[in-house]
Length: 221
Image 1 (spheres, rainbow, N blue to C red):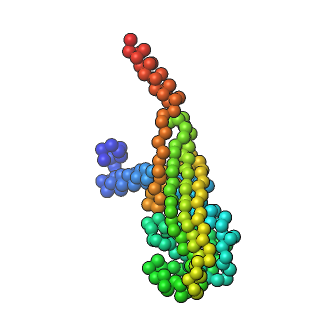
Image 2 (cartoon, rainbow, N blue to C red):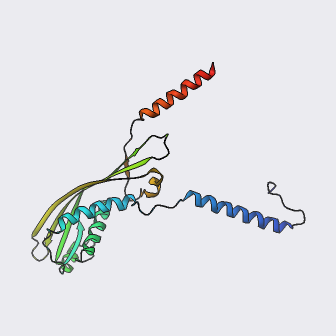
């Protein structure tokens, strides 16, 4: 504690308490600096991709031959690691549109068929998020371009007789641009992994590097 100056009349215990308070405050400041606030107007990677699923589903939902009063269960076939991303988006969209849903357990489809009049089955074909940084590294304001791609098949089955009454394949992609400063705060690696597209250095960066080298060479003489 020698780096702190304390008057000699203070007791040892009081000095220790003051030091602890100062160190605790510094730690809190450092922790706050490591976790900056996220700008709520920019969706996270997960929200961005699920938004594409919902928007693409809404485009075909008006053709779905199912009355909203009839119960429907949403299941994936086959079950895949990322299918929950699509299932959540489909379920939330159906609920928002006023459909009656039955909770579906993937390992008990027979029970689902007893509870729901229809089953909406989806098969995840492709789901990915491609990202690319734009703007020179020498500039202050860089951008992150995100491109989400979704591709899935839908099948509506009447649980009374097992007949498939509707089928559709849905594919869509959407792009957006967010400040590079928001990149880390919007990332959700546990849910969806970014595929980073590496670009070659901009020609302006090359000119700047050559200029710096030339200046160093000139100054060495």
